[in-house]
Length: 263
Image 1: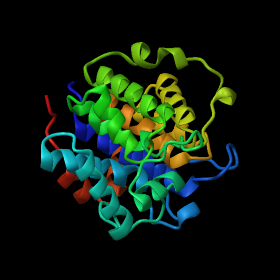
Image 2: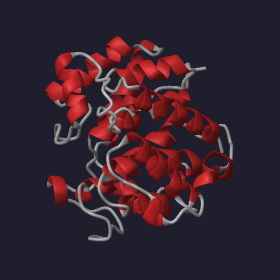
Image 3: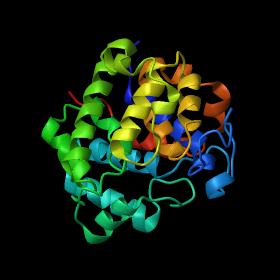
C-alpha cells in the first residue's frame, strides 16, 4: 500500500476529534473508548480542533500554490484565527504561542515558545519535496525556536520514511517497550513527538494507537492528532474504524484542501 496525504489527514482528524473532549484531563481520570462529544470544549462528537485546522490550511497553501509558500501559509493561518476558516463551526481552541505569533505577524523564538503548535500541523510536508530549511520556515511562522523547528524536521523525515514503506520498527522502534509512566503528554513539542512515536511503536492498529494517545491525558487532541496522522500513513484510511470515520465532521473541508503529492 502506498500511503497518501488523504490517509494521513483523515488519521490526524480522527485522532484530533477523539481527543478534543478530554483535553486538559489528567491521565487515568477518564477512559476514551471511542468517538464522543462535549467534555472539555463542549463540541459535538467528531469535531476536530486547531491541530487539524492548521494542517488543512497548510495543505490548502500547497494545493493552490504548488509549492511551500510561508507568506501565503501565514495568511491562511490568520484567516483561520480571525475568520474561522478551515473549521467545522468556528475556532474554539488556540495555543498561546500561536496566537501571539499570528497577532504580531512574527514567529516566537523564545525558549519558552516550544509548545507543539507547529508540530501538530507539519505532517502534510511529508508529501512534498520540502527541504529541511523549508520545513523550518513553515514551523517558524509561529514557532521559530530551534527546538521546535528541528522537531518538525525530524517528524517530517520519519513520516516520509513511513510513507515510503519503512516499518514502524525502523521509524519508531526506539520507543517500543518504554513504560507508559515514562511518557509525557503535555504541550511541550518534544514530549508530543515522543508520545506520538511511543503510541505508534507500542500498538498494532490505528484504533489502538489513537486511543493510547488520548488516554495518556493532558494535551489529548494534539498527541492523538500527531499519532493519528502517523498511524493513518501506516494503516491507511481503510484501517480507521468505520464508525469513527462516519462520525467525523467536516469531511468536506478536509477533501477540498487535499493536494496531490509534490515531487
